[in-house]
Structure formats: C-alpha cells, structure tokens
Image (tube, rainbow, N blue to C red; front, side, top):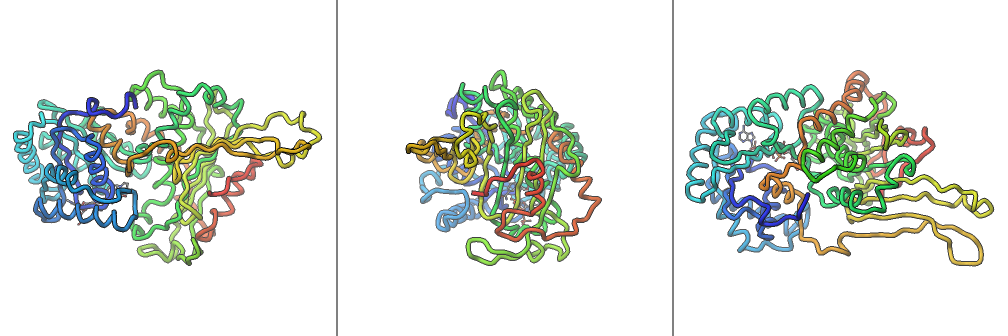
Amino acid sequence: MSGGRSRERCTPCCALVIFGAGGDLAKRLITPALYNLAKQDQLPERFAIVGIDHNEKTDDEWRNGLHDFLEQLVKSGKGEFEAQNIDEDVWGRLAKTMSYIAGDFLEPDTYARLRDHLQERDRKEDLEGHAVFYLAAADRFFGPIVDALGKAGLADEENGWRRVVIEKPFGHDLPSAKALNARILKVLREDQIYRIDHFLGKETVQNIMALRFTNGLFEPIWNRDRIDHVQITVAESIGIGTRGKFYEQTGALRDMVPNHLFQLVAMTAMEPPTSFDADEIRTKKAEVFKAVHPLSPDAAVSGQYGPGEIGGKKVAGYREEPNVAKDSPVETYVALRLMIDNWRWAGVPFYLRTGKRLPDRWTEIAIHFKHAPLALFRDTPVGTLGPDWLILQIQPDEGIRLRFNAKRPGTEMHLESVAMDFKYADWFKQAPAVGYETLLYDCFAGDQTLFQRADQVEAAWAVVQPVLDNWAKVRPKDFPNYAAGSAGPACADELVQRDGRAWRPIR
Ligand SMILES: NC(=O)c1ccc[n+]([C@@H]2O[C@H](COP(=O)([O-])OP(=O)(O)OC[C@H]3O[C@@H](n4cnc5c(N)ncnc54)[C@H](OP(=O)(O)O)[C@@H]3O)[C@@H](O)[C@H]2O)c1
C-alpha cells in the first residue's frame, strides 16, 4: 500500500506459472490484467509466463487463443476489460514472454517437465530463479498442486524466491479451510502464500483505508458514539447463468460472505494500523472477525429468486436455471446482522446483504450517522429530516457521497437532505483495470498486504460456521421467496425492521 506502484518497487525478474492456463479466469481476468500492466510498463523487466493446462496446444496456439479472446472482449465491450483496442506492440512484447506446457495437474511428470522448462527459461532470460505459481484451477486441485510443487522441489527457495497464489474459494467451511491451510503450510511458509480475494484489487476498496486513516475528519467520528449502524450491500442483477453446477454446491453465503463482504467489513471496522506493514494490517483485520459476536439463528436470513423481470426482460427463477435441482434448497440471497464486540463498535449493527437477480449491480458501504439532538428544530417540519449517510460506492460509478441536511432557501425553516458527491472518474484519469493488476503487481513485489493470511481466512469462516450448521439442519420451506428484479425477500426487511431500521434502496 505504501509508496505507489513503481518499477523500482516491483521485482526486476521472475516467472509467472499459470495453472489452468486455458480456463475462464486466465482468459478473462489474468491475461487482461497482464496486458494492462505491460501497457503501463509495470511488469518485471525480465519476465516469463508459463501456462499449464491439460489441453494439448502449442505455444502459438495458446498465445493466439488468448489474443483472440482479448479481441472478443474489446469488441463485445462486455466484462471488466475496458481497453478500446489492443495495442499490438504491447501484446507482442507480452506474447514473447509466453510458453505453454500441456500436462495434468495430478501427474508427477507435469512437475518434472515444469522444473526443466523453468530452468531453461531461467537460463535464457536470467530470472534469478524467482517464480510465482498462480493456481487458477478448481479448488479441488489446490492441495494436490501445492503437494506436487513441494515434491518436485519447486517450492524450495535455494535459488530465488517462490510464491504461490491461491484463488477462492479457500475451503467450503471452517474445517475444510483449516485442513487446506494445514496441508499447504506443510510445504510452504505463510510468507510464500498469496490467498487472493479479488475484491481487494478494487481501487475503491483500497481507498477505504486512505479515507479513514489519512483524513483527520473521519476517524474521530468513526465509532459507536457517532455511528448508528452500517449497511453493506453487494447486489448483482445477473443470475447464475451457466454456473448452476458450481452454485448448487456453494450458495450465496459461501460464495460471497466470508470473503468479499467480510473484506468490506474488515476495511470499515478495523482499528488503525500502526504502520503499512502487511502483517500489521492483516492482524488488525483478523481482529475484527475475532470480535464478531457469535451469530444466533435469527441474525441470518436467506432467499432464492423465482421468475421475474429485470430491465424490462422476463428472467427465469433459480430452479429453472441449467444444472439446478427443481427443488433446490440453495440460497441465492443472504442477509446478516453482525455485532462487533469491541470498544469502537459495541451496539452498532453491521447489516450485510448480497444476492443475485436483484434490481441492479450495486456495491456500497453505507455509514448511517446518529441524528443530532433535534430540540433546536422542535417547531419545524423535522419529520422530513433525512439521516446523515456517508456512502462509499464500490461499484459502479466508484466514489464517495455524503448526505446531510440543509435549510431549503426561503423565509421558513424547511430542511432537506442534500448530497456532496465525489466520483473517481471525474477527479482522476484512470487507466482501464480489471482489478487483478494490483494483486499481480503486489505479488511480484512481495507485498502481502492485500492477500489473506491463514488466521484471517479461518476467523472469517468461524463467524459464518454457526449459520452453515443451522441451515444444513433446516430445509427452507418458502423458496423461492423473492422475485427476480425485486430488492430481496421479506425476511431480510424484517431483519432490519426488528431494530427499527430499513434497508437503503438498491441504487
Ligand atoms: N472465472 C472467474 O471469474 C473466477 C473468479 C474468481 C475466482 N475464480 C477461481 O479461479 C479458479 C479457476 O476458475 P476458472 O473459472 O478459470 O475455471 P476453469 O474455467 O474450469 O479453468 C480451469 C482450467 O484447468 C483445466 N483443467 C481441469 N482439470 C485439469 C487437470 N487435471 N489438469 C490440467 N488442467 C486441468 C481446465 O480444462 P477443461 O476446461 O478442459 O477441463 C481449464 O482450462 C477456481 O478456483 C475459481 O473458483 C474464478
């Protein structure tokens, strides 16, 4: 986080080995991020990309396939890759660094060939033995790949550093997350492990720390004396599309809460770190999860979308999606009420909600400040007084909005809620980014600040484990309980209404 992203901070040389080189993540997010870094001249000067996947391909077929995919992304204008065109010089420089190995992740021979291949590329490109292994593969391969790297001597750091990037999901519950940590920590030290949560690659998420800790204005009011409650919303308008098989095993809680939503909770609720040291920041974040009051059954509600309408188009219900059971009990919506038992937050509820097929794609953190004493306005129409909100808009239209009350011009004292808006796009000229640039760059630089440590992951799973246990025992009877395009199920409204509060509208 410190000191900006300069060529000086990035390592001068390393190899990047991508396991799952032909997969969706590699094509849609990692390659565009590497292209963007190349365009901004922020890749290591001496660099080699090695793709591994079980599909037989030559180096050229792999490179050309990625190039065609990037072109499609540009033409369709869909997805996170916002480039207007592909700069062929930049692509040419990047493509020159790429080579491909066809091999099965579960075959020891793959790792023997990888070792020889890396030695060869090291000799040619003088990479000083440094390598990042990016596991862009299904999570069932995480343990076996790390074991195999260890057996093949590829995790040894005698001749250069070795780092392993592990994608989400990191476990499916607390026991599996602990087991995976224990397994990979037999091969790797914690400082070699980069557990990714791509929400942390977003500028606006990183900016929460800048907002809180570099402005004298906010931190003094960032506590239970001034804040009534916090609402965190991660709404998606898309359904599960072709990911039915995956989603049936996962659900909204596992997919979104202990990772993405909890990153937003941690950024909002953490104590000020004493330095920008990665471990100091990660300790402060883990402390937030450790202070969460154990969740009672009524602090979590779930929903599943039925058929409905979004943007004027009729859309199917979850149970009608491909590869979904006709009587599926899997939740596509979850809302939680968290209480953080520490001096800063005691008594301040954090309401979290996330769901699919909601009216809009919308991610925000909304801080609701307590009302000022109203005695002064006793004889004015204070009934119309809106609350003070500070809204950190994560996506889309990244920015910060402050809502407060002002006197409407005129002879009488009429108050109105007004807003001050800051939009990133208006203020900063931003280079297009898919969100993985920072994470890759930090990994090359050896900065673990934005990656999750073992204790953070386990503490986050520990918070949601009672809910998972409870939901495993009771099959929901009322699913589907919200229409696609609506703001979610009635039980989510009741969750906040019980405390005399209401959700903010989505958008
Ligand atoms: N895609 C995303 O947007 C996204 C976002 C966040 C996190 N992630 C995580 O990133 C990881 C990768 O996701 P993905 O969507 O890219 O998955 P994917 O599309 O299934 O990619 C995995 C690649 O590995 C190949 N593969 C499968 N089994 C193999 C084996 N035994 N040996 C060698 N290669 C094998 C697959 O080939 P075949 O397809 O031919 O089997 C495929 O090319 C997952 O852990 C996922 O949870 C993905």
